Length: 437
Ligand code: 5AD
Ligand code: SF4
Image (cartoon, rainbow, N blue to C red; front, side, top):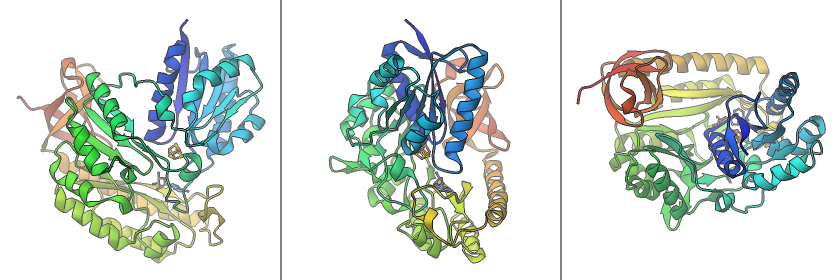
């Protein structure tokens, strides 16, 4: 019997990957994905705990859902998964008795039995936040078809313990999938039409297995027939080795866009964050990467108002942005996360100072991104069409630098790479025309 499953996903690309894998796990039980909760037989919130009042957001979403479903006269199974579930599972069951099931990021391969238990004991609340290193990947079914651009989780968890970050607590210790399993998944996806793969991990370039590092793995995946483009995220500066830099130099399928977060430009703050590198290490690394791949575009994440951050520290961040020449970046106010080292530091920065610094930083970053988009106009570049466009007769694709590009193009080009001349830039996208072959 067909049942309907609605998953609402928050947070990072790893969560998006997990949501797709949950669908794979539940498909044999007859669950098919639907876009809204209204008709669903099961609703899963796949949550994120990285910043700001994450748990509160989940509780208000649960409240809204309860009302909406009651109005519709439906009582689907309600499940909370992901990183808030991992961190606050007991609290969720205590405060939201309408929740039938709570499970963590390392338990979703057990969903079939968990859902069966939740169905038997409606209203009692089933909890599975076991984070033992039993590799869930060994128990997951083959991935379903994912379309032209797909993710593969190759590494999960983090052992670095940056002092602001909850990830080591919600995702657990670092775990690397074996190269053979990753290559199988890559071949399977390529056979189903995937052309671009993004290798995922919380600390993806710490991946190593069978004597290989990420650089070596990239070369093996690049050799899989059908795979035309490779990316990886999110990487840590301390784990960029020679082999990875060499892959940027001479593996043309590795795309020239790299998200390599630096977080701050002040050595004092980088040390308090336990990042394991200083600002000069990062400058040097950026220089080496760009020497290897001259068109490489670097992006970053920044945290403002980390405990003890002075105006001078903040200015060091602004200076680093100018020196490195990031093309875009994501910036956040420091948010004390329960259980992390930085949350317990006694020199917290006042909220209004954080807000003021964030506004200055974001003003600067917006101008940088706009300048970068504007420089694309007039250039020709291969675009991978992965979605229908907003209007009929249009396709939406991605440039080598991850920018969305709108192009008038026939539907038969969906899933293909084509050469496009960029004609216009907008705030967050480009537009162009096909270059006749
Ligand atoms: N407060 C603010 N930003 C954070 N990030 C991670 N933890 C925190 C925190 N406690 C940011 C970092 C990271 C991105 C995914 O989220 O910049 O790179
Ligand atoms: Fe959010 Fe981090 Fe969990 Fe991703 S791993 S969902 S960013 S808390």
